[in-house]
Each structure stands twice: as C-alpha cells, then as structure tokens.
Amino acid sequence: MKVMEVKDYQEMSHAAGKYIIDKVKAKPNITLGLATGGTPEGTYEYIINDYQENGTSYRKVTTFNLDEYIGLKESHPNGYRHYMDTKLFNHININISNTNIPNGDIQHFKEECLRYEQLIEAHGGIDLQILGIGSNGHIGFNEPGTKFGTKTHVVKLTDATREANARYFQKFEEVPEYAVTMGISSIMQSKEILLLVSGETKIEAMKQLLGGEVSESFPASILQLHPNVTIIADEKSLIEAKVPS
Ligand code: GLP
Image 1: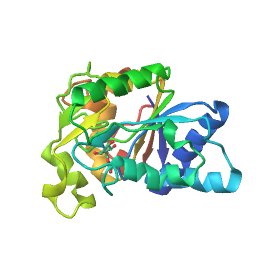
Image 2 (image 1 turned 120 degrees about the vertical axis):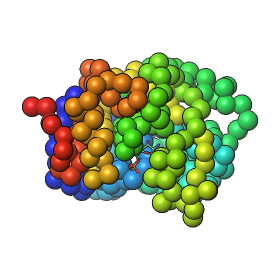
Image 3 (image 1 turned 180 degrees about the vertical axis):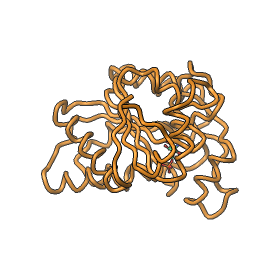
Image 4 (image 1 turned 90 degrees about the vertical axis):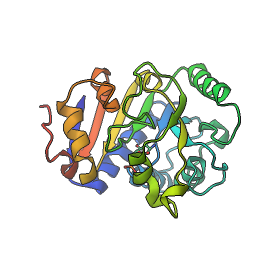
C-alpha cells in the first residue's frame, strides 16, 4: 500500500480528484468504482470544477457504486442514487445509463446481488475503486466480521455505522438497518484501489490499517494484500499511525 500524506481535507480532495481525472484521461472508457459518505464529496467537487474549466469527458466512463441502503425510495434524499446524481453525475457529461448503484428498493435481494455482481464482471471488472473507511474499519458497508470471500450481499448495519450516518437523517431511528454492498471479494477484484481518509474520527482506523494484522474483525485490513492500493490520507488521520516508508 502506498501512502500519500496530505495536509488536510482540501488537499486530499484535490489530490484524489487529480488522480481520478488523470486515470480517466489515460483510459476514457474506464470503469470506476465509486463511494459515498462525507469523505469523497470534495473530490467530486474537484472533478466537477475540472469538468467546467477543462472539459474532461466522462462520456465513455462506466461507474459502479459500492453500496445502497435498503428500504429507501430511489429518489430519497439520503439514498445513494440521489447523492451521486446531485453531487457528481448531474454536473458532468456522464451517460446516466452507464452509472450503476445497487437497488435497495426491491423485494428479491438475492437476485439483485447476483445481477450487480454479474454486471461488474460483464464490464470486465473495476479499473479503479474509490474507497472511504468507516471508523470501525468497514469498507463499502462490509462491517467487522464480514467474511473476506463475500461478493455483493445484504448486510445488517452496526449501531456504530448507523450512528455515524445519523447526521444525514432527522433522527437515528430513520437510518436504515440494512444495506446492499459489494463484498470484500468484489472490492479486492478491482485492478486498483484509491482509499481516501480524513480527520480525527479515522485515527484508530488508520493505526490499525497500517500497523495491525489482516483480520476479518477489521475489514479494511484485507487491503494490505491487494497489489495496487494508494491511500491519500491527511495529517490528522495519520497522527498515531506508522506510515510505511
Ligand atoms: C459509509 C459508507 C462507506 C463510507 C464510510 C465512511 O457508511 N457506506 O462507503 O466510506 O461509511 O463514511 P464517511 O466518509 O462519511 O466518513
């Protein structure tokens, strides 16, 4: 894992935005894996600004999002389809039909998980997967204890994750209890991974990611075994971690 240490959230967002834009320019039909949450918002803003100023084209890009809550309507303001449309897709020239997000508003989840996994495969896999990290080490919505071999599946969210995400809802009880997420194995099959980390709520997670063992009790630790991971992390998040030289 390569670690790029940056000053703060803004520098992380700029470095990540630039990283992604360079990859899109090098391969205009790239397949990107995208994340939600607070962490990538600044990166998406950077990409939009670049699009407006320099016209980088996303016409041939395909995207797959990591996860989606179960039980929210597609148009729900806290659903990840709404997040992606409003924070990125509506502001660049991507073809919306090339943007994929697991459907959390259906009855037959087994079929949906299979469909999503097969769709990724049919596109030849993900070239560059953007990831955030939960303070308990979750990636996507793969909570501690998730088997490393999992493909896209349904998860029960931990209270810690629901509490962390409650800031987007009126109250804790409104945060869905379940979600669909790409599995650990689906994520590990990406050709390249870019992990973005910022802020003091991630100090413990970074300490464990860079210094701890590979264990299913800390899902992100599996990234140590991936051949092409870049971490862009700010000073605050790295304060207690030993950054490999
Ligand atoms: C959320 C998302 C993850 C995200 C993580 C961190 O629950 N499912 O994809 O990376 O938690 O979120 P944030 O960036 O807001 O800290």
